[in-house]
Structure formats: structure tokens, C-alpha cells
Length: 336
Ligand code: SF4
Ligand code: SF4
Image 1: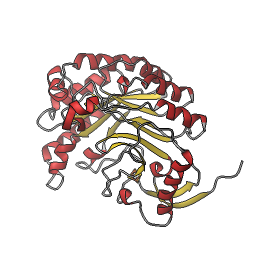
Image 2: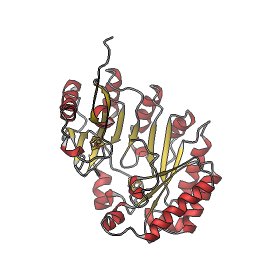
Image 3: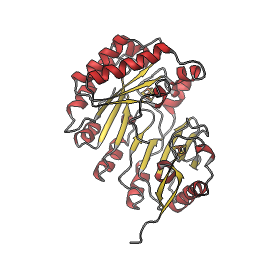
């Protein structure tokens, strides 16, 4: 086996060894990553207008190499300009994939007011999706996929994808141990439970509330009890890990931005052995106020949650990028 060469330059794990199967605002395609908040806008294509066709992997890696070469030359891929994930280090000069984002579907069984699909819910709920399983299987067969990175989902609701169980099973079987599945939590998935019980997978449920009334206001569906019960059930499947179930709360100003709702959410998590919690802030609200003075009431509320979570001794509190924009003094615990 020939020795792997390393070279030092500015790049990121997605550009080097990542792939995002996307189907959203920009249509169905394969991109370097799903990150679009960089000043450059992200959205760098590997294959445009992609609908599940067989992939020529030589061609795929030739295109990725062109982006890598731009970085190696000291310039920056236009979409990556200013991205926080760029950093200088020794990068292996190999062609493989270890970070995968499965985001080729948009259908969902929930209806969060803050979701991008609200722009045209009917359309996003009826968009056709190709089968990704054969592509991932092909990647395993050709030894293109490697353990070590992360597998994530976008969407849409992953658990209602007909091939969801098959895809997860394939990653579990191949020893992947860093999978995060965001889910509405409305449908209980035995496959998620299996991944949690082996310590290979975490489900992220953004319940955003601690009461039926607030939940319904945000999700436009009456499913608080169902979601809370499913979270409890998933948490019972955990074995020797703090992960497994990640509870998220997106603060939506004027809707769930009060201490009582947050207190009860923290209490619910603690009582049910949900030890990893995430705080975020609603995107459109933040974008409206991004250039003005931060709203001190929301800043105060963020400080309040951090303080409470520390007092209650949660294993981990993640503060998402958007929320950290308002409270930059807190370190990010998220992966780069
Ligand atoms: S640098 Fe940022 S925008 Fe570019 S591939 Fe990496 S994560 Fe995506
Ligand atoms: S659960 Fe996710 S995909 Fe579904 S409506 Fe809410 S934000 Fe959108």
C-alpha cells in the first residue's frame, strides 16, 4: 500500500472528504456541503441536476480535486469565501468520503413555522425523491466511504423516507458511530432506537417547548404528548452514553421566549435522562435584527438558560452558531 501524502493549506473537511446529497431551494444536486451562511454563500456543486443516476466516481473526485487545487493554490473556492470552517492544516491527499449529509428529500410530517418548507409546504411535501440507498451501497462496495467522519440528515423528516431503515442499517453494519438524525419525533423509529442502543446514533428533536399549547403554536400540529413520549422512549434505549437523544429548543421571540417554558423544558430533559441539550434562535428573526443592537431581552434569556443548564449539571449544552451571534462569549462545543 502506498503511503498517503499530506499537504498543508487552508481547507475544510467537507471540501476535502465530504458530500451533501441535496434537494431544496436550489433543486436536486450533489454539493460539497450544506452550509450556506458563509459570506461566499456555500452551495458549491459537484453534480448539478442530479436525480439518482449512477455516479462516475472518477469524475466525481476529479471535480472535487479541482476545488482542492484552488485551495492549494492559496485562493479560495468562491462559495467558501469567509467560511468559519476553513482552517489551515495538513490534509491527506486521498480521495474518499467520510462526511455525508443526506438531504435529498423535503417531505415532513410536521409544519414548523420557522421551516424553509413553509415557503411552499404543498410543493415540498410532494417533491419526488430518488433512492439514495443504491448510491451509498455503491460507495461502500467501491470502498469510497470511510469511518471517522459524521453522517447527518437534512430534510424533511428522515423517518418517513421509505429507504431510511435500509440506509441506517448499512451504516450501522459498517461500524459508523457518529450519526445524527434530526427528527420531528412524531413517528417512532425502531431503527433509531437500535442506533441509540448501540451508541452509534443520536436523534435530535427540536421540541422547542414544554407545553401542548406552545408546541401547537410553533409546529401547527397537535403532537406535543406524542413527541415527548417518543423522546422518553428513545432515552430509555441509551446505553453508557450521554448522547442518544439530543433535545433542542429554538427560541422564537414572542412565542416561546419565556423563562417558564424554558425551565420546564430543562426539567423535562433532566427527568428523562436527556443530557445533551441545544439552544438556538430563530433564523428569520435573527436576520431581521442582525445589523441592529442585539435585543437585550433575548441576550438575557440566553444567559439565563446557560446558567440554569450549568446549575442543573447537564452533560452538554450546545449553543448553535446563530444563538452564539448574540452571546459570542460562549465557546462552541460543536464540531468544526
Ligand atoms: S469551507 Fe464552508 S462553504 Fe466551503 S465546503 Fe467547507 S463548509 Fe462548505
Ligand atoms: S421538523 Fe424539520 S423539516 Fe419538518 S417542518 Fe420542522 S423544521 Fe421543517
